[in-house]
Length: 291
Ligand code: SF4
Image (cartoon, rainbow, N blue to C red; front, side, top):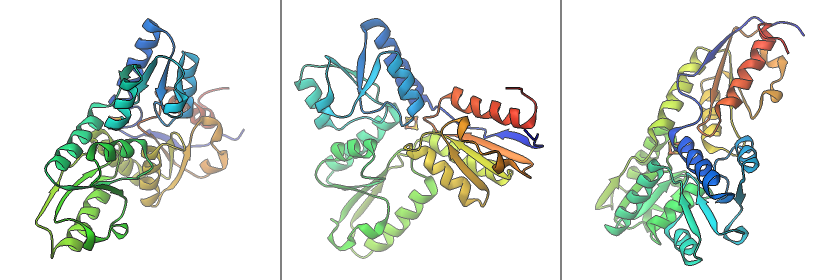
């Protein structure tokens, strides 16, 4: 294998966030003390983590109909009050691993709705966290990623705006600016609550800095992980060659040809062992580690 001459540089903020670490600790403790359990949907959007937890007796139920035991865990991205109520109604032992930052967004959604605001959530309507937030906001709410899909004329005069916790801060600001422009002649009150997770912002800012000083950036994380995909978009937008990989096996040595500075970052749902494996693989390409 030809040896490549490049420096490996890690993002200053990357990998597992406190919310995901906390959820996994809660689940592992519970399974050790009380035996196997299920989570309502994958605990994180990372196949390697889900597989490892399954080997410890923590499996994932695809939906309410797939719950087979007497215990169910709510993952870090939370659920709607209706879903939580249904779990209690069934008499299940519920282990709540909702991230405190997600819960803060849920409370913000409810407070706005209770205050008579139509709640607009800046986020993907299909994402489990956003589905939960819509449930907390109730009937008078909508989740969108751009203002074009909102018909400004039909919006009520009191509007509340929050964001999916893992959205990009700059995009949220741009969204708010466009929204204000479209309702400027008719609104009476607009209330904005910044519910973006500080860890997400730190990881995104650090990905920008990393991209600016790299010739190639590898973003490690699940293909279904929205925060990892966002990091990939952010790095690519800086004009640097960017590849998202789930495991070290996916690295194509051709990417490294002629590169002097290889940056590595990882999504909030990416475990340490995953990005450490990628760094070890890069060291093998450098000739500093042997297989
Ligand atoms: Fe919580 Fe932020 Fe992690 Fe999401 S990214 S689980 S909001 S700490």
